[in-house]
Image 1 (cartoon, rainbow, N blue to C red):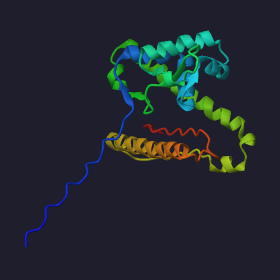
Image 2 (cartoon, rainbow, N blue to C red; image 1 turned 45 degrees about the vertical axis):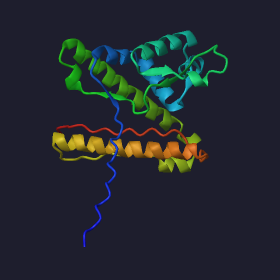
Image 3 (tube, rainbow, N blue to C red; image 1 turned 120 degrees about the vertical axis):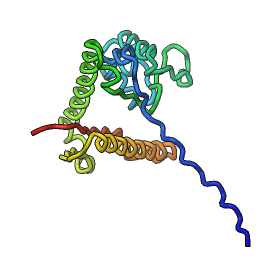
Amino acid sequence: MPQAPEPPQPQPQPQPQPERITDLSRLKAFTNPLRMQLYRLLYAAGTATASQLAEQVDQAPSLVSYHLRKLAEHGFVTEAATQSTDGRERWWQVSSEEGWGFRESDLAGTPEGAAVVGTVTRSLVDTRVAQYRTYLDQTSAWGSEWTDAAFSTEWLLDLTPAELAELSDELQELGRRWRERGKAARAAGAAEGREHVAVHVYGFPFRP
């Protein structure tokens, strides 16, 4: 007896990826540490005005507005036009929820490129460490439920460069899955008990 053909199987959709910066002039936008701080705050807030961000970084709104415009020129942030109710102040949002990244090999082939990559990488590390130190200084305000759930971890692994890259991809996918879970819960009205959570994971070679 002839069999019915198998129905076509749905093809998995490609997962969105962080934007990979290959233009040195764009990465240079983040050599200013205030811009790095503003981008991170705006990413967490979703949308915000220059005045709101200025209160968090203790800077003049005019200065914050200037740096937001510079980030917009390089495509990292954009106006959130639908947020404005009276048109008197701009609302901003990051251009992509996937964020951005870069490879040293794409940008560090010249002395200028190496200097920019080094500056931005150190700025990223400094802001992450500062964020974690702030948490450590405020643990008593969070209560045991949060402090028991918080973690810092370290693994010492024996890997090849290809395996380290594969680990990076898996961690990116894991973070993306949990981010979507939180977004879906908020969209469903289950925001109670939720806070912004920073997860910093590092993977790098070392020789003891």
